[in-house]
Image (cartoon, rainbow, N blue to C red; front, side, top):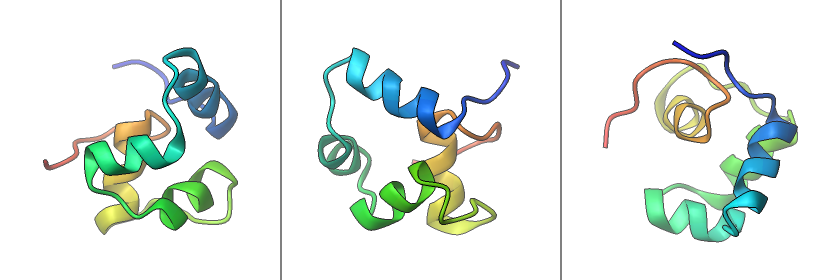
Length: 66
């Protein structure tokens, strides 16, 4: 398993593939405010949608249900 990305690295990864946060959220059916909070370090990804979003962003190792 690879090392998790930092929130800044996750944001840079979205930039590299040309995807906005809003587009990422629509693609994965996530709340935009939640994803922004994760990327800005205001939210911890312990369970539920926050955990799923963090795994999909690559900032947390784990499994995300579709």
